[in-house]
Image 1 (tube, helix red, strand yellow):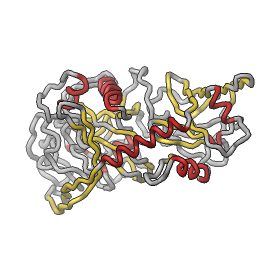
Image 2 (spheres, helix red, strand yellow):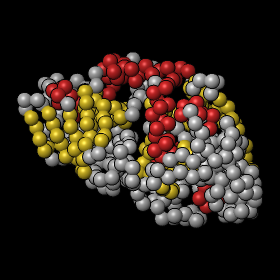
Image 3 (cartoon, helix red, strand yellow):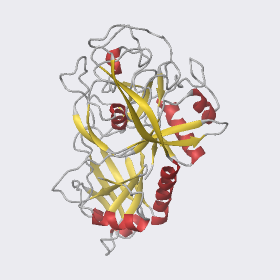
Image 4 (cartoon, one colour):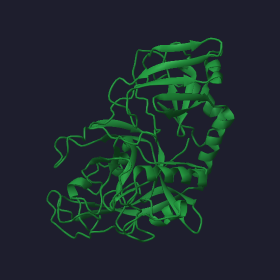
Length: 416
């Protein structure tokens, strides 16, 4: 379960509220080591279902530092304990986080919300033949980050929600790796457009793209390149930028729709940049541009995001598996007083419990950049793609070092 501070709450009110939440529980793991002198815990953790996000194995070890272990062992069981998590190879290290540091996250969130403004845009819906049958004006909250030299990075606020990820068996031309399942997603900010060449140049000082143009999406970048961009951008702005998880990407793409495309039952070259020679469903073949086009050329989806179908494929954070990571149950030892443990991961607060009566998903949104061999998830589609591969649920993967002229990425900004 993820806890987020309401914009109207003071830090103390937030602290009081999370103390009173009904517990979400996780399973029990084996306590491997407990040093009573240093109050050091080392616990074996096993995910009980498929391989979890971004990790090459499903058994891990968690280490709590001295201060955290001391707080967890204190007699004041109702006092919440905050910690932050890092991952390297097969060890998860959890370190103490004082409330002053937590307050930094909340103040950053307040700044982002206060600096956001409402925008209006028009969306379109099509029938099964690709004819526009509806136009609707929608609104969204937009935050802009100044990258210098008059370069702006526009981020759209995506509200939390629940959706059906994947595709039903009845969807035309679906693939077997699009297993349908229900997913809960916390709120986040996502790039209004794929990262452009001008934005890449402002952060990295070069331009690897095959097609050149300031407003064209950057392409010919690997997952490793994209991660380095996120790192430098975060350092430059003081905010937490990263790639989207696969679930975040599809949730944002669908934007409350359940049809194969957020436009409706099909797609046409008049509303997206893809290989129009290969249509979908009852639509007819059309223009194939054979190159990228400026971001924002075509209508956005109902969340206010552009180019979610076509132009460039987009890297995601996750390591690819044939089937979605349906459960990431985190087991933690009953020997810890984890009823009051809250872990901050990329700006999201997760609460852990030590009882065995219920299993709940524990979503870790982090990455192990040292694992450079496992394939990474690619979502979306490109100017090269057939319409079938432009569907919201379509999944692909490639080596993290792979580069091509149809492969770029979009950003997510995490806030508490």
